[in-house]
Every structure is written in C-alpha cells, then in structure tokens.
Amino acid sequence: MDVVVGAGIIGLSIAWRLAREGRPVTVVDPAPASGASHAAAGMLAPVSEVTYTEEPLLRLGLASLSRWPAFAAELAADAALPPHDPASAPSPLPNGATGAGDGGEATSGAGTTGGIDSAGGFFGGGISAAARAGLDLRADGMLDVAFGADDLAALGELAAFMEKLGLPVERLTGRECRRLEPMLAPSVRGGLLAATDAWVDPRRVTAALLAALERRGVPLVPARVSELLRDGDRVTGVRLAPPASPGEIPAERVVLAAGSWSGELANVPVRPVKGQIMRLRSAQPLLGRCVRGLVHGTPVYLVPRGDGELVVGGTQEELGFDTRVTAGGLYELLRDARELVPGVTELEVADVVAGLRPGTPDNLPIIGPSGTPGLTLATGHFRGGVLLTPVTAAIVQGEDADLATLCSPARFRDIS
Image (cartoon, rainbow, N blue to C red):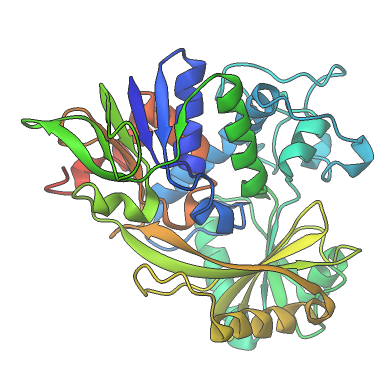
C-alpha cells in the first residue's frame, strides 16, 4: 500500500491517480485542502510567469499545462460534478475549441489528450463546458501590464526573452490593453498577451479530488504524521501524532507531499515562503481574464472567478511558518491593484488568507524516488503547485522520464 502524506492539490491528485490505477492508497493530513492550495490563485501560466535562467521550469510548466484539459475532464467525471447551465460556464476555449463532442463526455487516460495549440489556447481535450464550469477552468489568456515607464521597460525586456524562447506572446500598447480589459486604468502604459495561459479555481479542484477519492473508497486519515517509520535504511510507513489511532500505518511506499512541512519529516531542502491574498466580490465582474502587473517594480495579479470573486495577490515573504494576515500586506496588495484597476476599491472583501509556498534553492520542485528506499518525494512546487499538478502525478507514477530528470531529488545531496 502507498501512503500519501499531505492532502493539498499535489497529494490528493497523486492519490487519485494511484487509485485510478487500482493501487491501494491512504492519504494522511490533519486538515485536508486547507494549506497553500486553499490560498492559491490557480494560475496555469507557464508563459507569462517565465523568468530568466529558469527554462527547465518552463518546460515542466508547458508539459503540465498540456495535460490539464484531460486531467480536468477525468476528474469531473470521477467526482460526478453536477451539470451546470451552459450560460454560466467559463468563457469558451480560444480558437473556437469547444471541448467535448456533442455528447460532452469526458475521455479516459490522463495525459492522452489535450494540449496547447501553437497559435494559442487549449485543445478541447474531451472536457465539456459543464466540467469546465464545475472546476472554473478558463483559457482566455493572461494579460501582463505595466504601470510606469520602468515597468514598461522591464516588460519589454521580458518580451524579448519570451520571443527568443519561441513563446507565443503579443506586445500591446496601453490602448490595446484597455480594449481587452476596459476597467484598466488610463495610466497603464502597455502590456503583453500570453494567449495560451489559463487558470482554474484550486478550491474547486481540491473539493473534486476529495469527492473522487471518496467515491473510490480511498481512506483519508485526519491526523498529523509525526515521523516516518524506518527499518534500517528503508522507510516502512508513518507514525501518527497522538491521539490518532492507529498510531502507525505501514506502507510499501510513502509519498511525501506535505508542502512547506516536508522538511519536518525528511531531509529535503524545502522552505516556507509566505503569500497573502485577498478575495473580493462584485455583482458584475471587473475583468474577463487574468491580469498580472508591475507597479513600480512590484508584481501583483488579479484573477477573476466564475462566481464573481476577484483574487488579488500575492505577497512573497521569507518569514518562516508565519501565516498571519497583516494590514501592511493587504495594504500593499490593494495599493498596487488599485493603480491598475481603480474599481477594485469598490468591491466587497470576501476573504483574506495567508499561505505557505514550499520553495527550493533552484525553484524547481522535488519529485521522484528519494535516496531512501520506500520514500518518494513530491514537494517544493513554490508558486507552481496548481499548474504542475498533472505532471507531478504522472512522474510519481513513473511516466515522463525526461521530465522526471529535471526535478529529480538526485540533484541535491543528502536527501533522505
């Protein structure tokens, strides 16, 4: 039996894929779907979030994005998501893609369909409008905008880097940006459109994963793992912190997907990076697509939800395991968001939360067998956990050997 430690979007997706393959699996987490996945904005944006010297992460991100349509279709079917009124579904996929055929049924075999068109956008991938609505999966592209002259210069340099990599990106003037998103401020000077990027609601995804696991009879133990059980140099299970019963769960393999807390159980170079976000609510949506911006060199993003919420984030703070929401953090988010979209100050505050992103020294996740028999790692996804969910589950199952090499634990010494 496999034991998955951690019930965020990564751990749940791994357990779900293992259960689909008929493997016995148990998930252990004291508070499922309440950590970084609960706080995440859900951007599936390998193009617009590309950074210098991080081409391996870009390769992972593009591969995972191509798997999202099939992943979502299968999850919607397994979770038995209720049908939605087509009028309430997220915007259609770009380039006229309509998802499933007339029957709108999900396909099977994650990773076998779906992808990114070279001209931009998802293929249908067998996912119906109802499934997209159920997960709030949207593929309208990502708009990166610049507030000041220096911000525009930085965005221009990034565009040149993207073009050098052959990524599909379109440079826009300020007027063209406002034509796409009329609520942008007149002071926005220009931007970039990454038409292939997408986004999803992680809270809906984790809820669907929990439902799918329940339907497949996968046990979920609401307890904290205090340590890994070992027999010599082999991991043989987990010990639960009191008062959980039973106190130990034996396993042929333990998959450690505990995010920022992974380093508490194994010797892995993962650290917590705090991120504060706000959720705002309005009767009418302010934006039709994700907007990422630079305001005096500081990044901010605004992610619209299908239910009328607007996610504004996110700070990046090296403060250990501090999860307090602070006035200063919220002020900075609103200040910068208001410069780009002045109307945000009129919205109702629906939620504020701080999450801990699991960072690594090279910003790449750590996925695959560790140096210790019986222990597999799936952690360190930093800002890309939602995006990298499908490819992580595939790598843990032994697929995609070339991609697995990029994020192998073997690149770090003394992991155990």
